[in-house]
Image 1: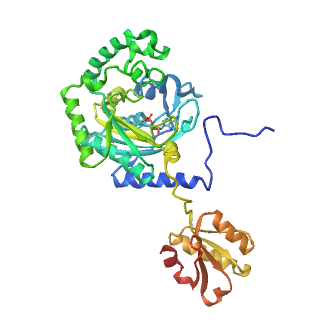
Image 2: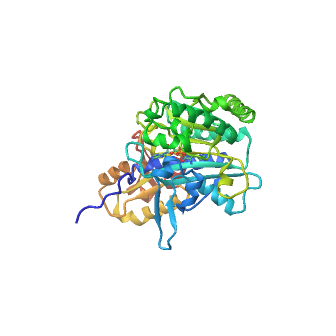
Image 3: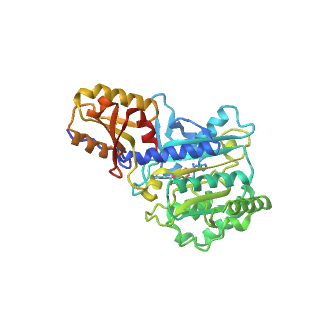
Length: 410
Ligand code: HAM
């Protein structure tokens, strides 16, 4: 029988490499809690319209990348390509947002893309959505969230690129100007771009193959109304007061249609892959209405975990266990088991082999499992002692069983 493999564009993560995924998730959760974001769990699939309406029918994501199928009940459903539309759908379904709702999520997203390093068909995002606030301070907070996450994940040299695409009326004005500009260069545009000149010209700014044609194109920032302009100025001041370095990228428009005003991306400058942004977000004050809800301002971001792990500086092997218990005398197996159980109940990460093995083999296993210490249960047990070895320094000493916990925590 031929061997099964993970589908194209997907991958497995197994121990011990999965340790860094766990860290990425834990750090994200800690930060979300510190910033006051609760947890949102939404289905991995939705009615297709949630995305085609929410994300926008003219976007690459909706036109070319959705995993859409008809279920056994004849409904068109789609594996979520992103979670913002789902979170907004859920907020509307639960009765809307009366004051503020701050929600975070973590999990797989699905886009039918051409797979390459840093671009997959199933990839992982950690995201936050700040619903119900129109204040530029909310934008600043969300931008800061992503920046701090990258800091804690040790991603070096991150550039925060920000821009504003204005409000609906500004965008309409700007789109007319851009449409005229693109019409003059129609013959040089790609076939995708030609389709969008009429329906959604701003998408062309985003197109890599048309980069040369749009190099000197007018930008949204030149057509802002007063409200959007003031909002953007306040966002920039907020970032400066928190000392978050940023650059204004006047052509940054992002690939999803629901945005207005502030948009941004995080780009690690030393990251060599073609897929450069490790996260991005923006304000989306119109999305609630698009999905049938009451007008509700909102801003959010999603961080691309796969790319963050590719770009982060490896911080040495991660320690997966505080201790590995080595049974030197097989007659002491049940005492060793009891010790493991007691330590686990005290919150220590500890394991042992469940079959008799030589001491040497057990030490090898403690290294392989990423343990910080080996705790040897042997002859000294009869005096109430164990031998503890620090596996990083090689330092070894005999201590009393009742001291183990303190020692391991030190
Ligand atoms: P996005 O820019 O489409 O935004 O995705 C956010 C991040 O997900 C990207 O910066 C990238 O790191 C990662 N990503 C996207 N596609 C792939 C892929 N095929 N393979 C690997 N990583 C990928 C959103 O999804 C919005 N929902 C963000 C948002 C939240 N805006 C407001 N709230």
